[in-house]
Amino acid sequence: MTSISISSQKGGVGKTTLSVNLAYSFAKLGKTLIIDSDPNGSVGHLYQRLDPSLKTISEPGYQPRGLYNMLTDSELSLADCIIETAPNSPSLLFAGTVDAYETLEECPAANFESGLGILLEQVSDLGYQYVIIDTAAGLFKPSRAAIKCSDFGLIVQHPSPISDHTAQQGMRMYDNLIRQSQQLKQISIVLSMVDEADDSAAISKIRLRYNKLSNIQCLDQVITKDPIYQKAAQFGYSVSSMSQSSSVTDQIDALRDEIWRKSI
Ligand SMILES: Nc1ncnc2c1ncn2[C@@H]1O[C@H](COP(=O)(O)OP(=O)(O)OP(=O)(O)O)[C@@H](O)[C@H]1O
Ligand SMILES: [Mg+2]
Image (tube, rainbow, N blue to C red; front, side, top):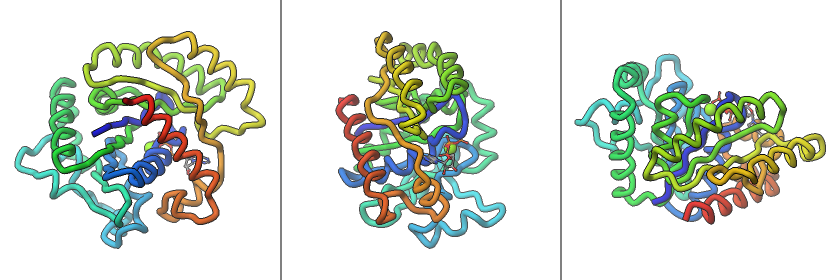
């Protein structure tokens, strides 16, 4: 099984959108699970159209059990919490309830990491081949655990100067995470919401900087800024489910293949 965490220092850079679309792309290759580790739990909202039972996500107060319940309640079985969606679509593990998250916040980071490591072994035992873990913005406890327990850490970065500044601040932390983890093989950056005409100079500058680092690379494939991503999210679909989006589907598949090559 290959596990991939998707994180960023800055919020709103497209992590959840990319997580869902990458999960769909990996699902074309094998059994895939997407885990939402963001306590705000937005992955489920992008899934509503796939499974009628997920429509309840929008109802006030609806809080399905998920990752944080699994990590705080040893009686709970993973099979009871994973939501299977349509055939050839990724299954989903919700973030879980707020009270479970708050309980876990009180625990030392090591508990978090060992719990997540055990959970990922159980996911593998259920026959999953690919796991995508969406994280909340910033390198706080749950996100750090997700990165350290995964095989591949994908950092999503916007090429704007302010995002680049924030990202540079975070690189030392990412560098420490790769040193501390026995699981993590590679950390790479994907530039997202790229406007290829406007951002080309900024992209070259960022690439040049990362080329000098040994532990963290900038991937060749970028994610362009395209309204289809927003439109798909608005209707609860992946971009690959929207027929007119083939070039965008191609870029997601190309990113999947680049990640796959670098994670083995
Ligand atoms: N490639 C893209 N092109 C255009 N819009 C995009 C793209 N990716 C994401 N978006 C839009 O940008 C907004 C933020 O995306 P998303 O929620 O995925 O970011 P995030 O990094 O997960 O945010 P947060 O840090 O709050 O979890 C959404 O409205 C989404 O539809
Ligand atoms: Mg998000």
